Image (tube, rainbow, N blue to C red; front, side, top):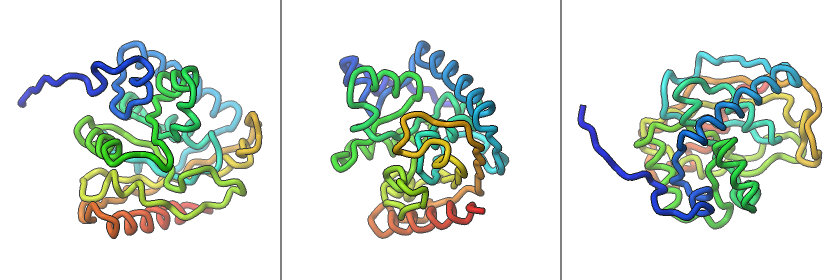
Length: 236
């Protein structure tokens, strides 16, 4: 095995810039905080929402891979993160709206150190930032959690998937795992301040592969279409 020493991707950044960087890497302190947070979230989902997970065997045995799903609640990312175990949990990053979760120092610290989120700036994410996310996914063997609709559904119905997912996985061997979370909109709709106890069912489908899709607009569109169909196929 060939070993290569490289500097951290976020080396030299100021504390605030590091929180908001797509290259942010977890230190021992943040790994410990994330571990505590994951245990708290799993306990909460089990008690308050009686979470049932179907198809856990469809998760790849090791990173890298991408989890995608429908998006109607803040419970979505928490639930998908909660099913990760081992190296996948430690290397799992939720891709979150930068203008919402990284709008202040306090929210940025919580999103970075507890949820382990990476910011995606809606309507102003640069090609360089997307390339950083794409490179890290493969080179650092990460797990990304993202919601291709782009924003939470206000009525609980799935919207058309956008093409951002394709820019990350087109032409790579990274599997994309479709998921559908039932009950999240009822438990915590976008217009509610806090969640209420209500059952959740997470269905995990078989991985999709897009190594043969070109990393260009036609390939991105095909990936969005196939991924949306795979998530919709999990609706009961």
